[in-house]
Image (cartoon, rainbow, N blue to C red):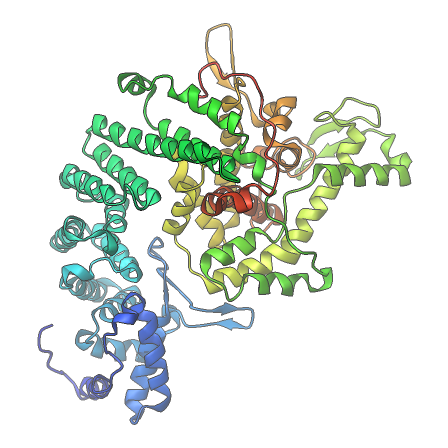
Length: 631
């Protein structure tokens, strides 16, 4: 950092206040806090602001503590910071709250801040609050600070957001910051080559992929990641597979498809070997765990084109894995009801929901959030519908006309004894849907919405965090992990309608995928030989869907996504039939939670093996062999 000469009495005043803070131990580097640099600074600065000897030093400490408290949102260009705390009564500071005087104070002291990460943060905040040349000046200070960091400081887990943001800034401004971008990329790729596995070089490699950088070094990075994978081959199979997955991704970037497929096949074989070892020992609950591993193997294998599988000598492996999944009796979708909650007094539901997710580590809090409600029970809703019809028999005798929100007639259903809907008497199905829609509204308003507020206040999860879930969840197709992660992040960030519009079509794809795994055809062919996919509503009319997904999950898919009676989310979102009223709707939030639960349960079962996976019987699978192995 070059020597800085004050240019005005005001600047001299605030630099003197900063010097007073530097004379304390507030900017000390504590190895125990190394991964929590800005949070630890926030805590010490906040404490110092309360008892600083000089008023100016007190004000500087208070101002810096507020900036250190901002929660980074590196994927949001327009609003890259959010408050640390957001409550109904108010929230903590964000950059837009800073006054002109406060911004001036920060501008006077930023070049002299002794802590590099704090200097990066303050410079970026000043850039966000500036325009024109002033903005570019602060961006340059931000990038210079990061470029000057030692190589080993490149990717501390809690500092990755700063690098993510800096790469975005440099790329968005093109030639202006080309030199800085080159230096940043050189530092990051150099870290991948030099760091040991305990320093998390894989996360840095992921960052380069995210920003489409270091492509000229793709082969070398891929080989380095393969070397790092070898260090985990006996000690940590999940880490071993994660590094080989990264290696495959980088070989793809290098256009070396043969090597990429070799990496993917190694992942497949690793899953199979682990599953076979579990089956051989016949441990309690091992079949549930091995079923998950076989599904992950099939998921990885699908990334290798069919023609390439033949060349690698595994052309029949797809069908073999599909058979193993069925024979293991651990079909992933059959374990969706695995979590159970204690009953909660309805009057205290909102408070109880908030308390369940508060004060816990992120993963545990997310698990509690997922567990706030269960998937719908077909048996319970059917029984309740029958009882209501017995109490009020007249309403079941007449046909019903159903209108859309814009007045169109979209369905006419018969009275009792008419044409069945999903195998149910139409009057019973109508009553079941009313019960279902009421439950969605109650669940969202009483449990999910207040708990989401508490959860998102306590923990700032990123797209990368959700990507970890989707990569480890066997229900998510390999070629859609990032799409699912992005959609789940949108919902976590409060944009439920965007999340739902992305996720509803993906639910349709999941249904097709699992039907094909069970040997079911999901397409039709016309007289011209053109093959078309069958829509979700038509697929869900099949009796086999209940066998494959289980009665509860099949019922909920039909009730939430299919048919004109009910929310019919797939049709509403896919055909542009939604209007502004859906933006804050309970159905959108519930759709996001429903898909998050599908993804999270398979992730959680993977992490906790038989303890959760064996607590429910898996769904009965179809005995038909797949004609093409489900590929």
